[in-house]
Length: 433
Image 1 (cartoon, rainbow, N blue to C red):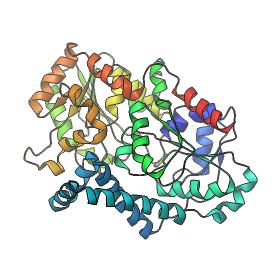
Image 2: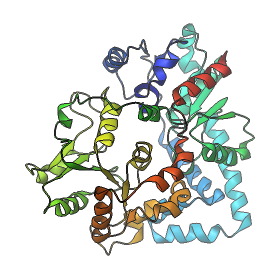
Image 3: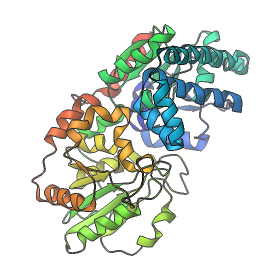
């Protein structure tokens, strides 16, 4: 949603096409709200997103495991370690057998063919023929529900275009179980990953590098202060922006906030601003209520529910532009901060120093998509509170320059010109017209 609506991509596509939206997250009132804010003319499609049976979900999980085994992906191996050392040991040992690797590849192809057949139900969407759709644009092509939509539309002669919306998707989410005519990715690395992972299926989809549509915003001046939630960002003080991570990956991050408060204890010129992850629970931070130099921004509210507010990216841009240093835990905020030219400190220590690697935040930095940054990140990762304080001193004193980090990340975010929205629209139009 952030990549196709908030980024301006829907607005650009809307100049040439009639846009209908099928979603199990947004309702008609959400579409109306976005239409008003972004001056769009999207249409709500009441047809339900298909349900997926437990058998299909189970086979999808097996397929993802086989995918990680066949290609030797660190991300899948580490996720398996989280389930237990025995599973991890069996995974590593079986990787040494060429016969088992071949078998995992063969089974992966077999399961994909079965999943495509099982999720192809053209009669389910026969009523949509009157819309005369030219294409399905899938923004979560690793989701079996979207695969079912794309697969069911294909017999009606409606092709699918898939947009890979994040740098970790190809190495963490497994195989795309639908046949797309065109694949749009962020950068060259992702293009090569797609070709490597899908060559076994004889895929001949066109792969195009379009950059990150939502990052186009960072080439413009940040918006003015509009939200009351941002009023605590005092330009007269130095600001530390801490972006919390997904709760399912990192269950408690209060210790990081406490460490930041301890750092600012003897300084009156520091404001700590916490930007909560969209799935974060505000109740987790009740213990910090009333602290003078600490403010929280909850990106979603009871009014918007699970749907990002219309100014979601505007507030993010403002926060990054206004802060002096960003603190995060192995998230995409690293890329956002670099795109805004801000120093970024990556947390790689836990509340309990003795926690095993399988449950430690350290493991996130060994995920496959993080590996190209390993050499550069060494100077920006902190493994304890003392290192965090030292890096904060450097960043707030202006002696820490993010130049090396930005130069390393530029190929990942393809940050050369602010034309990702234009390129994405261009590639879609070239393929359809």
